[in-house]
Amino acid sequence: MELRDDLGIAVIGGGLAGAVLAWRLTRMGHPVTVLTGGATVTRDATAVSGGLLRAFETDPVTARAAALSLAELRADAGLRELAGYREFGSSYLLPSGSTAARIRPVLDLVDELLPGAAELVDATELKTFRGLPSDTLAVVEPAAGCLSPARLRTGLLAAVEAAGGTVRAETVTALAPDGELRTVAGGAERYRAVVVAAGPWTPRLLRSWRLPDQGLRAKQIQYTIGTTDRLPPGMGAFVDETSGLYGRPDGPHRMLLGLPTDRWDVDPAALTPLPELAAQVAACAAERLGLADWPGPDARTATAADCWAAPGGTGGLLLRRLPADAPLFTFTGGTGGAAKTVLANSRDAAAALVEACPPS
Ligand SMILES: Cc1cc2nc3c(=O)[nH]c(=O)nc-3n(C[C@H](O)[C@H](O)[C@H](O)COP(=O)(O)OP(=O)(O)OC[C@H]3O[C@@H](n4cnc5c(N)ncnc54)[C@H](O)[C@@H]3O)c2cc1C
Image (cartoon, rainbow, N blue to C red; front, side, top):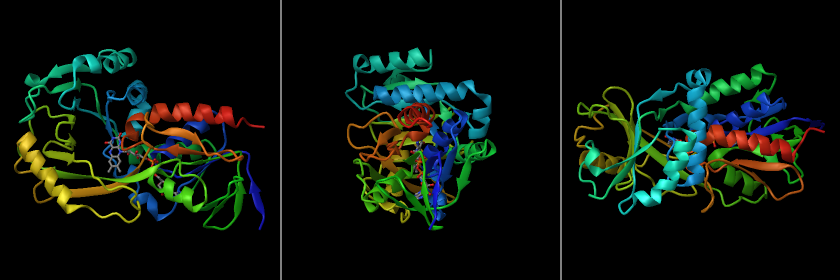
């Protein structure tokens, strides 16, 4: 069969990571082909993501990427519109035992990148929450919010196509160590560089292609959206590290709430909701927020997997070179929070990719 030799860059996966990276590369003038997969798209992390954004994270590398991403979004009305950005504020309740001195360097970093964005408060100011440890501290951001990762992906892939890039709804079935890839359609293709941005599918795909999995792992995430008549006024998004509960408003009487799962190395295409976890979330919502009537009869539980970086791999999505002679990379490992960091991470990744694989 004839080999299609392309001087552009191939991106495997058209989730948020692949779409934003392809958009960056296109804007830099590099021809891009995105292979978005088949039926898996509707069940990917991007389709289900809560899209919560804030600048503060306890890890400084992640906080830097999150603050830069939020700054870019806030400065770009077109991007905000495309992403369906909504602002309602955020509180990050730190684990018991946290001290102002330990958190100060990250707060200073966030303040440098987004002046005045975040402030440290103590338990007396966290009136929405019940039963908090008395030493609880929280980082409050009035200008945080959420976007729709699915809308942003669709909009940016359309922008890639409008600028002359190629987006094909095809599944890649093979990637050889020499860089040659094959799709379901059967043809062999070679590119200047290939980036595997297949989110939680990435570790399995790499292993099936006899490439190193880079310590990446797929983990399940689940949340429930339900109704309550008791939504406290001014309720924004929050992460409560003292209980694990996280959430955000989803309309005047609706709240998205979740707890972390312990389901590792899952098959992203074969996930089902965990009813016992949904029940734990309801119990925690009643205890921490007094939402005894949540989630109500019209509740919807959503679940999907995301790709976790190996322990110690922080900072959100990262471009990682596969140890092969060919120009092969991954761009994944957002560890459950890539909607926050993708704008900054994709800018860095696109620059690093072009430097590693300049056009001939
Ligand atoms: C339930 C949930 C809630 C979340 N909430 C938040 C949040 O509130 N805030 C936040 O910052 N982050 C959140 N995240 C994280 C963030 O949304 C994800 O990190 C991000 O969407 C991941 O994008 P991705 O492109 O890496 O992966 P995905 O969106 O999973 O995309 C991977 C793509 O690869 C494609 N693919 C797979 N195999 C192949 C193949 N062989 N060939 C071609 N394509 C293939 C799939 O079809 C899929 O479209 C959440 C994630 C989940 C799962």
